[in-house]
Length: 116
Image (cartoon, rainbow, N blue to C red):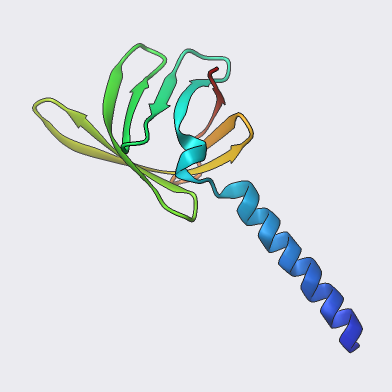
């Protein structure tokens, strides 16, 4: 491979990496707000103080704290009275007003839209 071809390939690779991180990594600020699951009734609400509230499709409500890492990993600690904390680890992607949550085993994908 010639020097010019290598530099061109390196630039393309760098661009792909940057676009990947811009697409799949979200900041805490992007996550803040209310979300509703597409085609369902489940809701999520993330606040600036690190707390969240969630209501599933059967109407069960939970709340707790969340932590969002720079690599798009979301850790939710669910608190319920009289029960120890339950921890849920997810991968998130935010594109505009769409939030995609993927379980740690990549088996469950949920899509939410930002509520206005």
